[in-house]
Length: 211
Image (cartoon, rainbow, N blue to C red; front, side, top):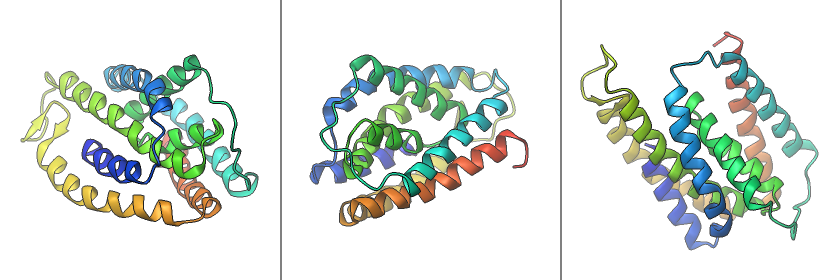
């Protein structure tokens, strides 16, 4: 479903100049490799401890965005290609292993890298596409021989669920992109910080076995 959501969102952001394609190209290879590798090892490891650690990291980033990051760091040089590829690989793996949207990790990285918040959100939407395509293909492939899956699935991908969720997300993604470019940058950053509190909290609580 994130494939459809990403296409809808990135086209809306791109129309408003919100996608930095030069950094997207730097991260895309890592995102694809990380997503495929993550899909392959997702059902082979006990990732609860790692999930809790990533959750704590997300909560710390959220607190920074909410309380300690009031100014945009404009004009900051972009990270090297190696850092971009490495970050993409890590984000792709985490997204596949834990089933989380890459944006919860990509937006903070891009904002740290010096992108204005609106471009960080827009570029993150574009980064969601290679994560989604590689992850979906990986889960479809690695789930081929798994028994007792529900009817109407290709590997671990449920076709009816994909269609139903995609229809709604295609519409709402465009609405979200429009709102992102209407909000002041500081308000957008704090709104994302609140969202990251929930995402990080869910990861941490799942990691320690509460959820």
